[in-house]
Image (cartoon, rainbow, N blue to C red; front, side):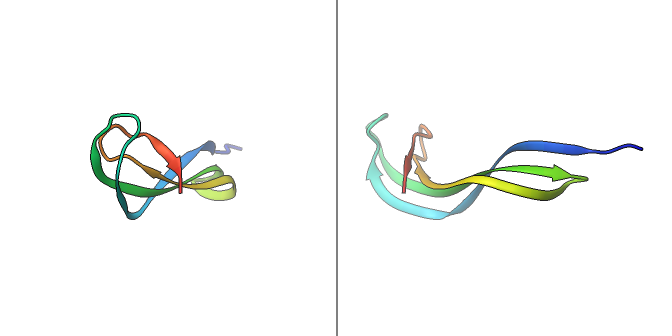
Length: 67
């Protein structure tokens, strides 16, 4: 019997966020709203998800802060 399983972190783009100045790179840009979660899959089907969080990420340097 052959079982294929996986474990990893997934990110999903939720749309545009606010326009603000990044405290890390000091550029003013529109940030992206993101959702991140960890998941366990069996035969490429998600079975369990945990550690869900929403955040906004800078469009230039990728710095992320809780939304």
